[in-house]
Length: 100
Image (cartoon, rainbow, N blue to C red; front, side, top):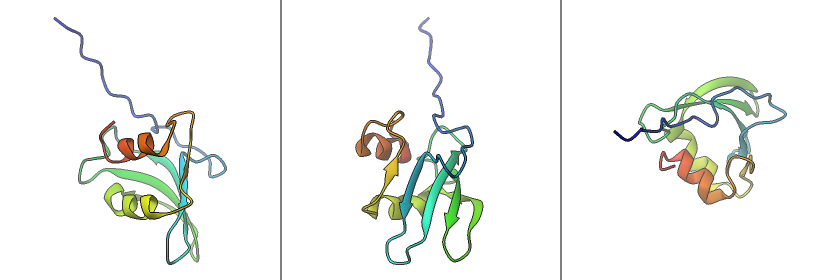
């Protein structure tokens, strides 16, 4: 019987604001989001959540649904991410959409 490899959540450990997994500025309103943690392996699920730090008029930590964040993240020109985990934007996008 072949051994099935278990998927690993590469962003499962909380990081400090100074070293987020990814960051981007919301187009239009200028608020900055920092990805601090992903709660699950499959970000393609409807209720998948990321723990983020939102730095804007009201700076706060909180969980947000991934599907609410993806559109702003991938429409931002200044999306940055940890290249030791995702070598390029395409790899990060595949992970964020649950295709990795």
